[in-house]
Image (cartoon, rainbow over the protein chains, first blue to last red):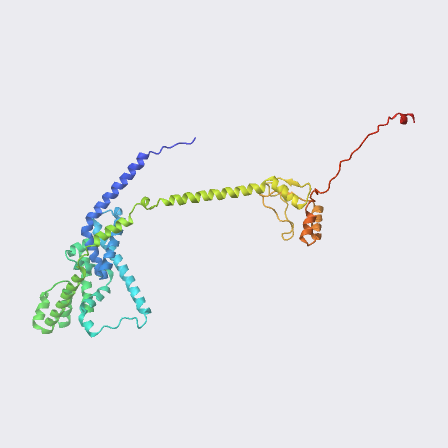
Length: 188
Length: 221
């Protein structure tokens, strides 16, 4: 004999409202972290990309991804570290693709369309040291680069950087040491 | 300590973030002008690196960062129900009605082909005065199999009725078709049944009087 099952509409409504409640709670929690973590994400992206518009876009994208998976984060105290990793990875991807595009365009550009070589005045006006430093930072391995950028951020001690990255303080110090040493060798 | 080793130590201490000479290096620096100069140059370099890095990283955060993020969040997580336009239901209904109509027309045409009236018309076209119309046989084994794919009769689909035509009738029909003149009017006149001619009047047979004779005389004979 066929068994009839009665579906109670009230139960579905309860489940919906519970889900909505959980969602709004997560949303509030995420919003409370944005004020602190938004600038951090932006600065990490800015350190890699060195372009305000790109850095803003990448930081927003990273926070959006973090929001989408926020309910899966078991340890809420690790949110900052998680966001920094997402941002750094996204920024590196963006930077690499921009570099590839730039190389392609340089290869395919007609000679008359290529930018004219900088004049002596341009060179003198530009901050040559800053450009060399940025290039040297770009050439660093990702791990050293991230530590260097985080350590240079205002308000972050090496202990906090170690906490952010989830690595021991000694590892942070050694990565910073090698990063600075390589930079000085390239800039000398 | 020689100068090379001293300069290595200077670099290491500066890279480690120490802005002052370590004791054993300081002793060498006091006696060696070259190493003291190297220390100053390298210390300035590291200071410049730190300053540039701080400048690079600690740029002011644009005020549009968080509002932009909130706008993107709202755009990305809009409930799906609100996105579905109302007119999409009308399109779905129209497509469903169209499908049902087409199905109905197709079914009607199939029924029309299967009806006995259509079968009898087909048999009359062949020229059989009393066709034997057989109902559709479900078993595929009963169907006559063609002997040769190219020459034999085409096997009809199971949906259409079968008409049995005798071999001599088929031959006669083929002969007739072969002998039909090419002139279209003549061919039509031969194949169509003759129409009743209204101009010809046939008068009824009239008998004025009937003479009835008795059978007695015959009986006498």
